Image 1 (spheres, rainbow, N blue to C red):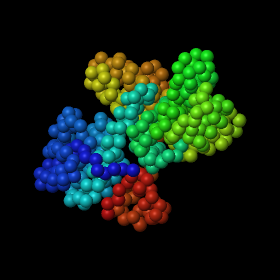
Image 2: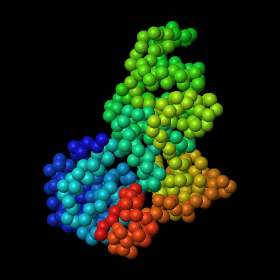
Image 3: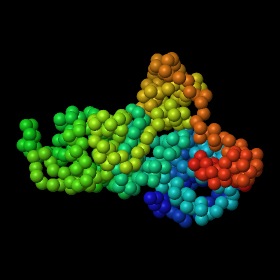
Image 4: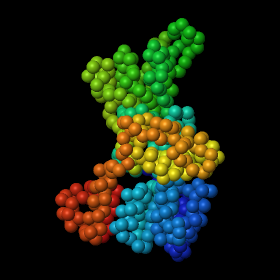
Length: 453
């Protein structure tokens, strides 16, 4: 799916002038625009004032060092891929970089052929991220969501998106209200070969059931009382692109049969017409209800359920994404501060409260809370006083979950500790963990742990 011919703006940060000149020459030959910085402060200043697609930084540069710059990027500019490079390769530094979200980790001198390929892939990822962000500006109620995160649940979702983006298969996105279902649909569209054509969203719950058919199929002039002119339906409008049916569980049973026929024939007839029209769209549906339960009760057709549920993407609630919560909050803070022309930072007490709240409204609620706080704050701190009462005064079902670590993190920490204990020896590490070498390799790959022996 990746096209490795795109050129990007690369920032190299290193105190080793010889090393940086070699990297600059190699990447310039690939038609990348290469800029250089010799210390952390000038690097951060450059990033704040220029469009950077990929950052390549040595972890041993002057303060703020490479690790601190990496943390800064992940907090303030999470869409920029970061490649870490170092002369002092250790298991600790590699594991820390990868588990914290680095795009790749190289030892000096790097394999330059591999470096070129990794940089090209990073540039492509950055360009795709830009497409997603641009697509969010087209009017969706979730337009300010960026699908980011490094929790195990979100990494699984991202892998599915990348795997099936160019497929023609139908997709069903499930999850609670506010988890970002439309954003995932838009990201699938932006990454796909249909991205040049329209993404057509339809909120099935917001359109009266007696009008939904006309909205989807379109109609001819005089088809019914009030049809004073012909109108193109959403099926036709989405032809060549993607049709997103949000809250598909609200589809009336009678209309479900008609949708099934459209999916089978890829043709529709406008109301009041007997002329067939092509409707070649990819279908992505979403629901926050239990569709299997509706199938069992006869409210949803079994054949349609299996037709739309070729691939299921289930979005976790925000309370299961504690590792993503601060990153999301910082991103929203940056966006709203830019809009309101303010400079704010969260206090430790605010972030602790965020981590201790259950977030029943998920990411959408977090966004609204941050927006409110930015509007209310007068100084430079976003503090507890700027939170709405339901978040500021935690009680009842809003359980404190901040001390709970996700299983994938506990597993990653155990692998890291064993690798350090046995100096990267895979056989001894696997034996100490009570698993096979094959199983250890699989867990290292899944949890993005790098072994440097």
